[in-house]
Length: 318
Image (tube, rainbow, N blue to C red):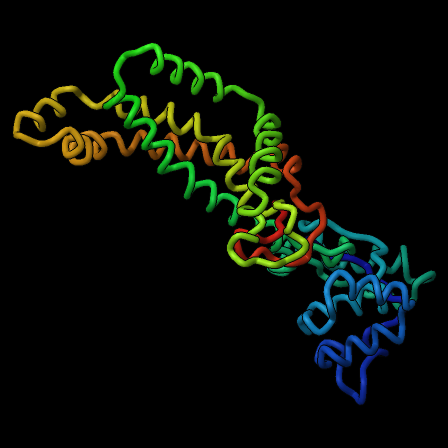
């Protein structure tokens, strides 16, 4: 963020049509300018990423600026000098660039803008944004939470309140503790084998009428969400067990003494007192899922995608 000295191969003012400034032209006019001023190969490559008729006026305008006007940054100044020493910045720019680039301009450039958040990925770094990745992350985490929370808390309730102290119960408890320490890449391999391959008909959406050929291999948001749910499930179970175990036994005895059933006692006495600890554990587990990348790479997260995920059966990146 700060001042930058910029020069253009073709100044945007020269691209105006019938006196209409470039930034005010219709999307179709901007696409025409782009087609007339770039190679056919570049034009086809841009359209293969996303059809021009599906792009907004702002998106096509940015493509025209990047590929036709071709701005070149000659030099930049940090934010503090830009705010406190404007005249010195202008003088420095004149001394450095006026002779070789007489048509240079001084612009205040903010690299981190709303467009960076709301723009999808692009092969051009100047035009690239993180919208697709943000939406993909939200979809994956939503599915992860929807699956892991009920299953994890339910398993913790069973193990603490219903399961007897038997060899099987101790074996299950030991396995849960061991799974909490398994490297995340192993869960990625498990997700690839189970959700992407074995359950491809379900995770690709074919069983529900989804016919997108790009996701017919099961590498979808649903596969990613279920894989991440398996990853954090042991953490949720262990933390929920600790929270339930911390509830005083006297509360259970009081509920049972009043004639409540075991489930009524759990629902009205145990869970309300354990819920803060359960939520804390769930938040910590989800924070781990948000930061994991290895499992998603293994199951097939897209490295480059310009289409926003719109359902559990969409392609995705995070």
